[in-house]
Amino acid sequence: MPNIVIVDLGTGNLRSVYNAVQHVCVAMPVSACVCVSDEPAVIAAAGHLILPGQGALGAWMQQLNADSALRAAVLTRLQRDRGPVLGICLGLQALYAHSAENGGTAGLGLLKGVVRHFSERRGDGATANAGGENSLGGVDKIPHMGWNRVRHTRAHPLWRGIADRQRFYFANSYFVDSEQRSEVVGECEYGGAFTAAAAQDNLFATQFHPEKSQRAGLQLLQNFVHWNGGL
Image 1: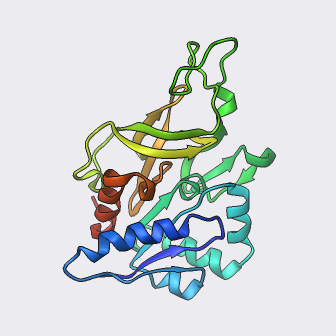
Image 2 (image 1 turned 135 degrees about the vertical axis):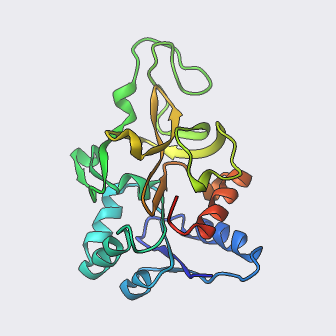
């Protein structure tokens, strides 16, 4: 079983991701080695790589860009022939070229689309329902926080054993507006549809937090550690 490296970019939530991945690995016939690291050599040698993050994308990108060797190692591992990669929350948003955060934050530009703030979807003069959506189709509650259903937009190995429209846990003020339909594998509704999961070659990334999503989240993580990066 290949080693699994969780990249440490100083944006929190690393312990819960580690614990969740370790939990699914313990049940395997041969336990995988799971570690959290910001060492370029460790990241470069990873069999499976996880890019987690919560909070501010600007801080995430600043940490990545502050170390040229770290950035190079992460970008190399994101190449299609370098093994499976899972992005979580900021690890999804960072894959796009631009985020509206802080007046504009540059991302990695690997997927097509932009990251927008939910304030663009506010309605005027309507009352929000329990899900945060109002009668005009906008959203009044930001961030989008809690459980929401994810619709599978195309088949993928990481959806194995996970029902369509299964609930996952979200915590996001920004959302991905994809420009390439073929890269979208899951959508969620919050003032309109947005990208809940995207995939390309050996890369799969989610806006939701599988490590906080109970059984469905653990199933997705288990699928990831068994995934060879192909379809």
